[in-house]
Length: 140
Image (tube, rainbow, N blue to C red; front, top):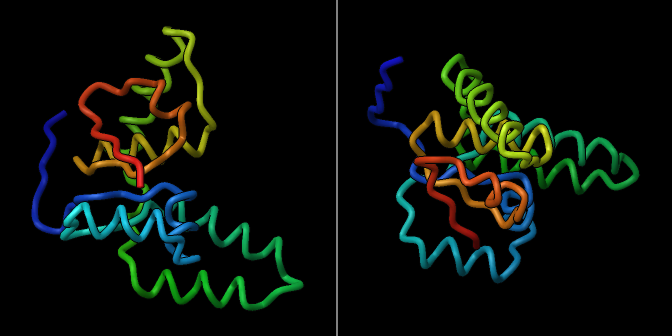
């Protein structure tokens, strides 16, 4: 499969934990973002789903959903596509053969970053342990 990377490709793709930390304006995440010199920061539609799910669990606190909605208006969201699905299948099989594992959504987000040619921003040790060939990972 030929990969085409054009304008609009994410430079950094945030996982759900990092996106949540940025939404809450946590100092460490904000400092990492500033120091990265990022020109493009985005999330996967998988991360969007997880953020919305978490906000719906907190329906007793409408400000959580308001924060998520505000965050989503300020960040690019990449739709899950065929390249991401192909990368996911390849990465998951490789991890299984090596006896490594991570959460299903975490693997999907990592695969999406790999398919986009983006650097994944995560602090998830299980994802890092997958040692996905060609995927750049940083922690903020």
